Each structure stands twice: as structure tokens, then as C-alpha cells.
Length: 371
Image (cartoon, rainbow, N blue to C red; front, top):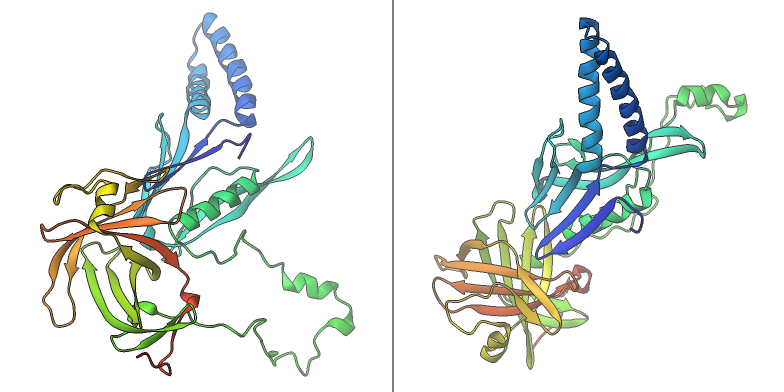
């Protein structure tokens, strides 16, 4: 985003987007404010009249607003559980807002106006979030850089794992009555068929529902990357966090091999990871040298991993009452790889390395037989 008022950075498990309020219009408003203030000052030198009080108030407000345009910034911080928008440092009419990621339906870029300049007509766009209840909220001030806003949209959706429905802008349908009046008579619907709606068809009817891997049961056979595996266990974890209420630990086996999977619920959708439990030497290499000490960050090769929010809950196999579990997930901005550190009660910290998997490579195949 070179030469853009937008700045993006990631640290730990947080994506921060900073947008400066300063723009070309701010300089024009600054010039107008200086002229206005100079006129008010000249009037005051020749005596203050009550008629000038209104103009003085306008000058004070205008000067404050111009200073805010040059100093203030809007900061968007996306974390695992929430999306926060703050404005400052000077207070204005804009409120700071924090929205749980579970309540987000979609992020998209929409047109909010046009302007006539020396170079022609230009459009202004705004990065907008839509909540599950239909409420829409602008994240940043309108700007002309649609490409930069679209890039931010994709980064935010990828970071908080929000599906993209391809809506880049709001489309408004024209007035059909006006169009009908412009059509020749032969293109207008006949009176006989005017009240009969035509058949509506989807352009693509081959829509397949993603396989819900987290629902598999022990004994079922699942095709994983083209090979059959029998499910040995599916252990549920119930978290205390309502935005991430549950997870699943799945173990699948085939002759001579065993695979571990972690299913994570975020809002209304599930994400799947394949994980490998680390041995004592690998845990010590990451910094888990003591049974009850968890490192503040992990270094794996040349990458640094930082922990996300703490999760507390109950882990229980079928027929068990459940055991207390504490868990942290370590992320990095340079890779999709991550580490899951957990312990049962006050026991030793266990660690697994995880990689996300596509549910499209998972399929229930009860016709397979695994020895």
C-alpha cells in the first residue's frame, strides 16, 4: 500500500490497520480556516460585537476540526475474538466500538459518493462491516483508493476466518418502470404472459455441502486425502467462551499409521487442523522445559510464534464427566502453521504442531474396510 494513508501491521495474534485522517481535502480546509481565523482576528482588533460571536464559534469549531484531521487516526485491531475500532487522540463525534467476531456476517467495500474534480468524476468507497442482525457500520472514512480497501477486506476476512461472498460493492437496480418505457413494443411482455412469472434457474446447481468432519463417530471410516482411515475417538471440548464454544479432538488410524486432528469452532463455522503431538525433546526445544511453566513466545526456526487468548473448559471422552483443560494457541504472521499448548488440570504442558486442512479432502466412506 505504498503512498496510501493505510498502514497494516501484525504482531502476535493481532492484525492492526491504521488510517490517517489527513488527506488533500484537509489542506484545502486548512487554508480556508486560516483565512477565516484571520478575518475574525481583524474584526476583534476593531472591537468585539455580539454579531461576531457566531463567527467566533464557527472559527473555534473549524480550527479544532482541521487540527483533528492532521493529528487523528482510525485504528482497527482484529483479534481472535473481537474487532475493535478506535479514533484519536483528539476526541470527536466518532465512538470507539468493539464487535465480537462471532457477530460478523460480512466485510465488503461499497460506494458512498462521487466528487467532481479537475481530473473528472471520482468515486469514494468505504470499508463496511455487516453484523448478523443486518446492522452495517463503516470501519474507515470514505476514500478513493478502492484497491487498497479491497486488499484490507481480504486481509481481515482471512485473519478472522470470515467467508467472502464476493460482494465488492452495493449494486442498486435501476427503476424498471423507466426502462420499460424506453423499450420498443416488441420487447415488452405480452398481456397474456404479464401475470405469469418466468421460471427462475440457478446458474450453478452443483453445490455440495462441506463434509462436517467434527461430527464423525468412533468406528466410522473416513476417506482422508484419498486413503481410508477408521475413526478411533472423537473427544469433545466445551470452552467457557461463548464465541468459541467447543472443539473436537479426533484420532483416525489405518494399518501402520495414526493421524490426529483438531476441529475448532469459531462463530457459526468450523476449521480443521491436522496436528502432531511433540515429544519431550521437541517441547524442550520450544521452551517447555518445566512442567508448570509456559513460555511467552515460541521460536521455531526463524519464526516467532505468539500466544492467543487463554481458553478454559472441560474435555471429556464418551461416558466421562470431564476434566478441566487450559489451552493456548501460538500464531505467527508468516505461516499458517501454529502450535497448540494445553494441560489437564495442573498437569504437564503438552504441545502439538498444527496445519490447517481443507474439508474438501475429507469424505465419509463407510464402504471402505480397514483391517
